[in-house]
Length: 473
Image: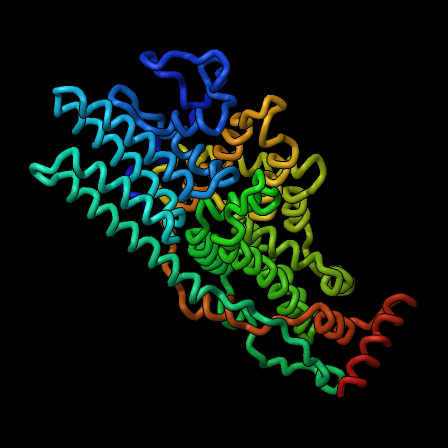
């Protein structure tokens, strides 16, 4: 977690990175509109990143540029260019007689490096980046060799960086192994599951508590997603201006693991419903998950809510007409209204905006929780990327595009930093994370066993499934 509070004042009503009075506006490179940076060459944008004696870049600009720069240049190459600019400025200051100016300049460079290493530590995972960082640090240390203050700060910064890299490396090593669905359902053709078999209701029968435990899992997983992970959505799609920039360095393990959690939860919901033998108990299970989804909505956990609804809308569950006829569907209809995909999920986006506004004025972590539907969040970034070009016709970087992507990612980072207010229940979470889930094929078998096929299409499907399984046996 960054030690410097760089996100607290980020990305307000207008784009930052405004022209500093002493630096003046340049006529063509970079370009500003109403004082806001909208485009520029890579070289000009890099120059805007590096502090001078009389200038320090706005933190919104630092974040946005460092986030988007990986689309155009590898971090170690960017570090090298920053180092070159630093050397030139240092040499200019050394020709003067005021040592204090040199120390002030050094402090600003250290602050930039500190923000960079805290916010994007993964940029320094390879030897080339670490080498460039050490080079800059060595040069800056020379500005204050007398009392060694700069050296101590750099040492602490490096130590924090190595700890951050180690923590991320450990997470990747123990990252969630994809839970494989149960496919061997041959026995279901001979005998139905025992009614005494353990299910979610035997572990937790309170919808609110289960919603809280789902939220705990969501926040735990989302905490391991970083801004550079999200930027993979952009950098993985392009030729990266003929650079092999990030695809060979940072993989999308964290995004895949989080997406896998959504799919597992959907399949778990469907499994829990389809494998129940008696219609009355099955009806109770459906109504229980509807209540859980509603509690997730109230908490602000839209991702779990969507996963639950998706599970209940899977064909093996949706086709259970006798079960659904006994379900009080008014609550479910309200939930589906919130997740209605029409008008680009307008209803959901309105609810998300309301939760975000509540979070901004909240006094407790409970009210600060906002967990968006992750695949919709990813699609929003994807479409922002596809609709707007990386470069303008004049060859300059379309920085206006990256302001908007940065704003979206910043919102996500703000929400993910909320500390979960709910206590962890190991028993419930163990069940949610390890209980067997059926494959789509196994779900259909369980569904047909519970309520037989009603039309020719279902009868043909059921016959095909039985034949397939008998041939396997």
